[in-house]
Image (cartoon, rainbow over all chains, first blue to last red; front, side):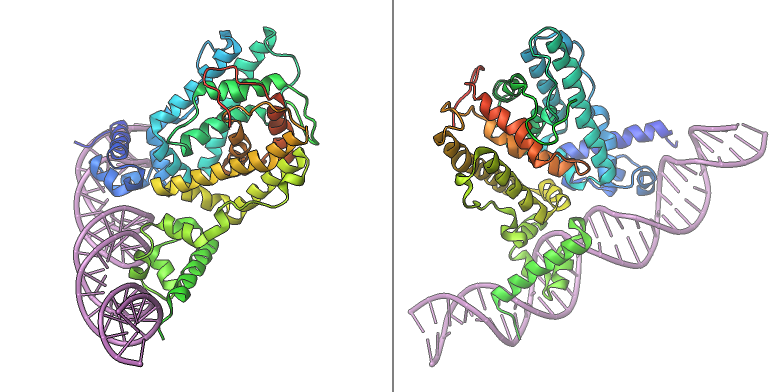
Length: 196
Length: 196
DNA sequence: CATATTTAGATACTATGCGTATCTATAATT
DNA sequence: AATTATAGATACGCATAGTATCTAAATATG
């Protein structure tokens, strides 16, 4: 008669995904999700303290970055492209509208989660793509200047979130931005340049 | 007795700014603004069809990009830094929270406005900073590969919107990213590289 | 300057969602 | 088997969304 904890939580997640798909993030409400999941608001409020948290939880892993395997075997350019493609696919699962809305409602905690996800992506770029390329001799051994690692993802995100019309291709990002920047591989000339 | 059109609109703008400052974007409402501006909801709904539009209009020029003068006289590095500083100051007037919220609620029209503002910034970079540097011989005459111009702003925005803790300095962005990328000045090796 | 038009300002209304409180019957835990 | 946690249902007060209606004053027009 009464559903178990897991049944309820799966029903909630499904309801959130359906509401998102049908009406968009703006119209996702505690009331609507409760109705759709055949449950009630108190059940939701016991779990999530905000709409963003509810949606984020229900989207689950779709948002979070898992390491694609085999990146380190690819030549530099292919590795970069594969990583960019992976990141873009992850975003497309959620959709630009929902992502923008989530960012807009994010509190400090959620923002910290997003930041961690970005840093993880940068770590994968450094360890799974750049380091192997250095080992293979595709790149010189000079340390990468601080801040460079975020560039591919910053550009990708910019394109995905804002340029919904004619975004750059992944090849353009890789060939015109990532590769030149990595090959420049100059030591920082500025004040506080560090290494990674 | 009855206020003029301009008086009312200035009162609305002031009310929005006050509500923003006191309670943050999330709590800005048509009702609250109407109360604070000593007017009524219909007066607001006649003007703005959404909260985002109301806030955006009331923030007015704070958001929009005006050309700083004298950029073209500066050496390349100084010009880049000045432009980055200008862009960052513009964002700080509004604040990261409000900016994220606005982005989250932006409809197609508002998003198009944002995109235009970005393109304007890129235009200034190209015409007021890079072109003069080429004329002075600080940069080679090779055309800039497509997509490169957005990089400084993409990185800046990424830092401003998401890395609220320890963002990169403008000097790091200029020295580790912008200058190496511009000096690489390689023709695109990839498929569809164009020029600007 | 007189007339026509617009719209500020006030009020009222329906509808929706928020967030909380309360109760019970059942699932989970020990 | 006894205890604890919580699903499920209902209800409530409150805030805001968005619209409709009316009037009197500001603005535009000829």
